[in-house]
Amino acid sequence: MIYLDHNASTPVHESVQKAMWPYVEKYYGNPSSSHALGKKERQAVDHAREQVASLLGAKPDEVIFTSGGTESNNHVIKGVAYTLRNRGKHIITSQVEHPAVLNPCRFLETLGFEVTYVGVDSTGLIDADEVKNAIREETILISIMLANNEVGTIQPIKEISSAAKEAGVWFHTDAAQSLGKIPLDVDAMGIDLLSISGHKIYGPKGIGALYVRRRNPRVRLVPLMDGGGHERGMRSGTLPVASIVGLGEACSIAAREMGPDIFHPWRVRS
Image (cartoon, rainbow, N blue to C red):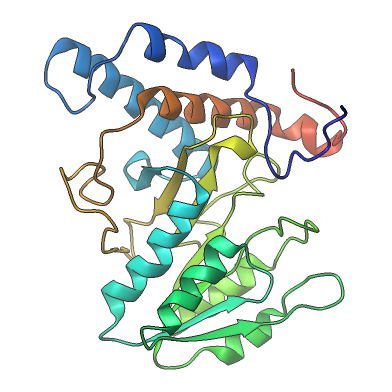
């Protein structure tokens, strides 16, 4: 079989496997524990957080580990809705988003929120002016994917984020298909919230991250899960250290190899 669907999922890079294995075989402590084994795990998580943040142009404390892109998208859309529902109940997204964005929006519609779904042209491109014109006083979130998962169209994120900032609206992008393929800089691009997934960049399945801006404007989200207060209280649950280490290593490899890959898209990482 010749596999040509790396937009859906990628094999786990050999270096990622090697980085993960000690945390499967040897280091099995809880990273929230204060004993030596727990501290070893916490150090690995902190290092991975730095690796992910570096690829995004973010600060480590702005990276929240999740189970993947779907959870990250749900956390953003529902978390913003619950946080800002007293300010407004209008959300803007596009007709070509991944179901992990569209379905949470449809769920919110059942709770009384209103969603505007902007269209695209024949190439799958969104008109930034159409997004800007859709903004209302009660708009609380704009969620537009950075690159389309079906046809690869790269959206005018900077123009859209500028319109959002001008209106005082939080801006989110699903970057699962962009990470490791094109340069990302959350500050330069004006992104407040960003979702990624590990298995799109030669990392393991079941791990992802959510970037949440902590600088001006500081973004706050209502957590989807309550529990032990992990991830600064935003995502409770014992951290899957091996998978987090794998995501961090995959981001490190992507940062190192992105340049050659952009100019040689046929190149397959071994």
